[in-house]
Amino acid sequence: MGSLVEELIIGGGTPTATPHQAREYLRTAPDRLLTDAEIEEIVAAFVHWGGLVGIAWDRPFAQACHETRLFRFGNQVALVQRNPAGIGATNDGAPGLTFPTWTQGIAAMLIHLMAWCDRLDLAKLIHRTPTDLDPRIPIVAQVRAEKGKAVTWGDLGGRWAVPGVGYAAAIERHHNAILALPDAPGATKGPNMALAIRDAIIPATNANRPKLPMVPKYITVHETSNPNVGADAEMHRKFLVNGGGPEGVSFHWCVDDTEAVHLIPDNENAWHAGDGANGTGNRQSIGIETCVNADGDWAKTRANLAALVAHLMVRHGIPLANVVQHNRWSQKNCPLIMRRDGLWAGQIAAIKVAYEALTKPPAPSGMMEPVITERRDWQGKGKLVAEEVTVVNTDTGKHYSRKVRHDAAGVVLEDWREV
Ligand SMILES: [Zn+2]
Image 1 (tube, rainbow, N blue to C red):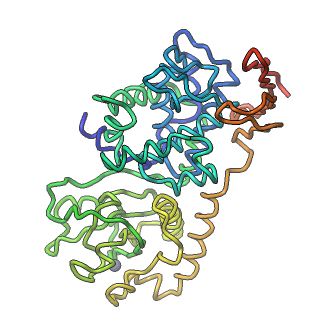
Image 2 (cartoon, rainbow, N blue to C red):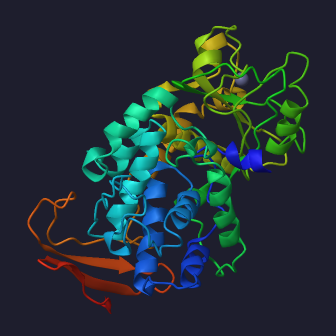
Image 3 (tube, rainbow, N blue to C red):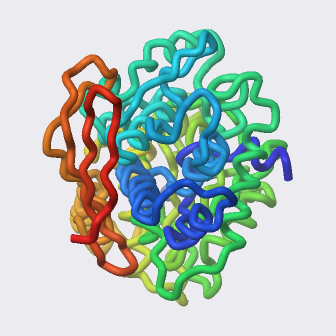
């Protein structure tokens, strides 16, 4: 189990906790210091920014719970700094940055995470100039150049956390404790929930998992061409685990009308394109098998395919022009039904809609929208100003607002009031 946690890919998967569970986790924390409205703001910020960059928000939330001792802080960084990543706090005792809102501090945390993953392209979805929120990015880049980027949560040990032994397991303990809490009826799992993603990476010892490193530049769409009843994503997962047939084929993802199953890490190649051992399709593209089982809902499967492709485009910075048919690489008549029935243009249009929905900030409904009356220098060098922050509770629809003033005495937080 330990190794499974260590190997969990940062950014992979769909949230398994609900915002309600996350709020309950902070509400019931021993020696809790946060107000109800702060808890709402914090959880909403993780859901919002996580959805924006296509990362399951509940795991960085669990990481923040670990880093901040359940948002009680109490070490070098104070709660009032709203800096869960401890950005700028160093061994020489520097206290680190202060953010005017939790929303900003959590944005900086996710940017910091992206910096370790060498995904500043994604960080730009949060802020056009990520270094404005996280001035430590150049230092992260230096360490990354020495030690390599983080791909899995285990990789953060020895990078983000030093020495970091058991770092991923500590995050997992928080995550499990969150999942153990009661859920609210009808609770949403956040923007990623539209598509159920299941991580089921096949064993590294499989011969059809060649493990050649890959930087994905394309996304290749296939159809399984297996119309049999029951030939769904789970059946194709078993097919890959059992070796991928006499030719030892493999593919990164398989999607049906209920889920997308992740079978080969996106940063490794798979044998799916039929263009040879060094072909661009086989070595630079993520292969997705689309199920055509007779008992599947074909329209739903195609909708899930669109959502999956959009996710992968965001996650890997792949443009729509590089979403291609298997036919592109080896002239095979695949994806067969989409080609035969003239569905490809519509499929591309659906992917475009899903991509735009994913990269646009979610609508205010259910999301916390901070209203900042005046901006403050993130690094504390600017003049003292005041901000007003408004948050929305996604469960009750109630709005709360409070003023944050900065004067000679420091940061003064007025009480939250319902508006
Ligand atoms: Zn194919």
